[in-house]
Length: 243
Length: 243
DNA sequence: ATTTTATTGTCACACTATGTAACAATAAAA
DNA sequence: TTTTATTGTTACATAGTGTGACAATAAAAT
Image 1 (cartoon, rainbow over the protein chains, first blue to last red):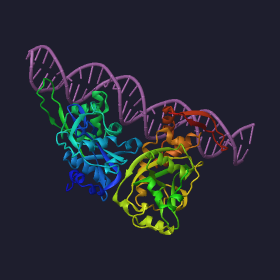
Image 2 (cartoon, chains in turn orange, red, yellow, green; image 1 turned 90 degrees about the horizontal axis):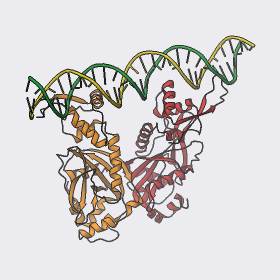
Image 3 (cartoon, rainbow over the protein chains, first blue to last red; image 1 turned 45 degrees about the horizontal axis):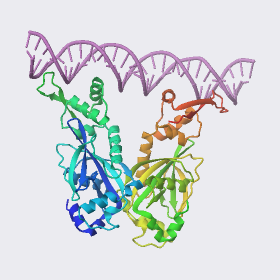
Image 4 (cartoon, rainbow over the protein chains, first blue to last red; image 1 turned 180 degrees about the vertical axis):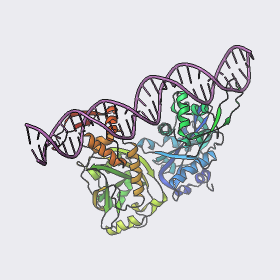
């Protein structure tokens, strides 16, 4: 990354590099200890929470812009990304939260400031390895942190709608091995995979049926046994085959 | 509609009413005589074909803009519309086709003309009653006509990609009764419904299995018998129940 | 009036997928 | 050696789907 938001905000003319009116928002999913998590930014001293986002450069592919946002917030490249919807409600035009953010940052602005436009948000969800990601706040933010999806703070504008729609798409796509591949460790037990499913779907699944379905799918390769140190039969570990 | 494109093109300042860089494209599906069709515009004297599209007014809901485009091209309101993807490839930035269109229309323009920007296209597909729609060309076009989806002309920019992605989404959504409801007459025979499925999916389906699945779905109400005037048993006619 | 024709509605059977309970295997603690 | 909790597997019932067979029928052909 040879540019960053700090340079951009320091020089208002730099906003000229971006397409006006188009923003990119990312629902970045991680998974740890039976909890589904997403990354949330907190703007400085404002108590305003938002999904990580960014803008589209005038000579940049739309999907590349989403990858760039991902990289800037997590340090990770080659992330699974899926564009699931574009949000264009007029309710998104409320500029008060962003005015508050700019004030708290002591950033001078007028009504025509780039960040105070109406934005159409092209939204992606991403699947990342919770352990590998290193969340980084942007210049306007104090923090970029993981939040359990069942304990989210109140989010700016329609960002909670965006999250809910992303989760619905994730639930529909759960049977693609890319979901387990990106949210779990490289190898895992059948119980760990079932726990992931149950967390994402928000419901208990039958153990026998789940086991059979996964084995018949042909997407899992059984490796050795795993020592759990617990007083019962030790489970096999599995890995996803490429598909 | 109290505005139209004629007024807009006559007065360059009117482009100020629209969000820059954002366009809306519609894949408008119809069905007639076992053929799936979409509406295609032909720009005046240029041999350039394109999907019907439009732009987003600064104070307009994104979905309302799509409805407006639909109404302008078909005269129909209350159409089934589904936003399926947003296209933002740099390949869309090639302004030569639109320059040709403007030249053929004897419209003076410079490099900064509204229509010669890079546009991000928010794309919808629509399902309309082929018999009720009355296709209307816009000012830049000679015609707005139905084309069989298996005999499409070469389309501008990435419009063929857009069509293909719309068709994939239609195929995935085919089991929602809204598809049959909007593409068939109010009442229909089982064969007519099966023909629609086969046309959309591009494959033959088993008659017995199709019949059974439809009846078990609970989405069909059997009405009376239909006189076909043909030398064999006459079929029942059905109607979709609301869901 | 009877037979022929093509299509429709339904049934029967096989096969697959899924929900559920039961039971044996097992690793470590008791 | 027994107990405990979890895992892997099997068995059976139920639901869904693919396929062929056959009777019902509306109008044309005889």
